[in-house]
Length: 289
Ligand code: C2E
Ligand code: MG
Ligand code: MG
Ligand code: MG
Image (cartoon, rainbow, N blue to C red; front, side, top):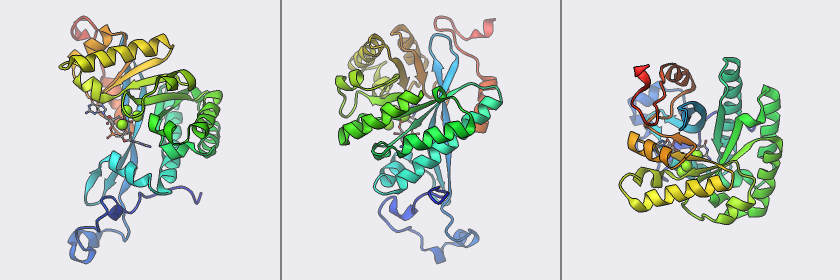
């Protein structure tokens, strides 16, 4: 497939600077195959149903291990990729990898839902819907297992075309989450008009909610509003037990964050799950059982 991306974009474009070390002066570079651009891969972060402690899904997060710079900040990578056709190729690669991974988990008896982040321009043509439909069929993965996370920025750029694409995906059964809710161009119209299944409260509010009453109020109202509209609500950036307890008290459905687990490679997820012991919302650890 000529459109498949096997390597990441040109590293020199990341910061608009040429590589700081000239290649012929870098001893390590000589040992690398020419043009080694490092490795792109997916990490997965667990999403936990707050009431039961059960892991219900994962968010797939892109990682790029640069041969010399190490892990590159995903937001920076996405920002640069979005300026070119590279984003389209990255998204194709992400969808392929995640659907294939869902099929592997399913074969191993793990029925998970996986969420994939998509960028603004990924939704401007129907190409992504065609690709997703094709991959789900090819790997025998139920559409309900896949969810797309979109941000409201995507809707501002070309609302009509984006709505057409996500409506098609919704019709085939793929879930749509509104990511980073409360930042950017939040509009209550989006909650009413889009075929959404989930709202994700932005981590900036969740991170602040134990110390800042305004953040706490925003999180609580978003939970209430989402639930009143029949949408599942997910809090991201849950870093400690107090936050988790506050979210439980506020009726939040799902939590994601370092309190439970950091994003990790697919192989580690299976080991993590084998060790994972849910906490009881009002007691301590469940190891009293
Ligand atoms: P996002 O979609 O809002 O993803 C959630 C981010 O919160 C992730 O950052 C995750 O690692 C981080 N996070 C999770 N739990 C915690 C926590 O408890 N505390 C803190 N401080 N952070 C937490 P990450 O992996 O660096 O990704 C950043 C952003 O890059 C994502 O934000 C998303 O917008 C974008 N991104 C990542 N992967 C992809 C991709 O495959 N495609 C596209 N289009 N965008 C992606
Ligand atoms: Mg996301
Ligand atoms: Mg988010
Ligand atoms: Mg974000």
